[in-house]
Image 1 (tube, one colour):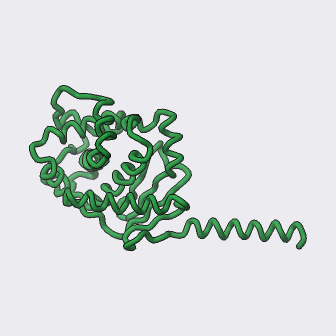
Image 2 (cartoon, helix red, strand yellow; image 1 turned 120 degrees about the horizontal axis):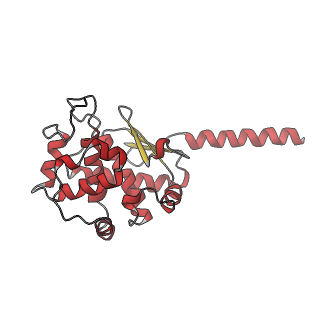
Image 3 (cartoon, one colour; image 1 turned 90 degrees about the vertical axis):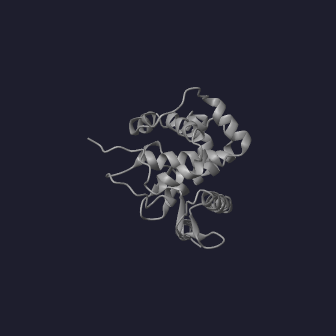
Length: 225
């Protein structure tokens, strides 16, 4: 075979492999699919299945199907993205998160182990999927969305990681709703995550409170001027 022919054949093979890698792969049960996950597909499927069951304990139901796509990078320094109304989640590969954490990103979870953090990112985005139809009287309710997503991210961490998260930024004063603002969410998401967690811990019935937010009975957001 001529060199040009071999090059063309190799290029075609690589292209075919790229197409196959991008094709959605069904997780066991067929409710979740992975895309571009490669060798991480099994781990992602397991994390997604576990998150689905965990969220049920708060009466949060993840609609099907959900496609979790692994991308080389995400926009605006995001750690994960749920695309509303599409059932699509974008994340990075586990190794990419390790690099980001070494650079000091995701500082709220800096003391959490790499494996627990990766699973928590998937759980965070699966929570957004469960809240896709969150009742909201305004144009958007990001505070309510992220309050539940962050608290679910922390709630189901292994105990040692949850304690490490709490001890990284201990809080003594009670957290009021006014301390959970959209401005803080945008400017200091790591502080928002800690305050949301402390606020939920002060509720007499955290399960009921999460349900009230999810049903639109409790609003953490305000109408924008």
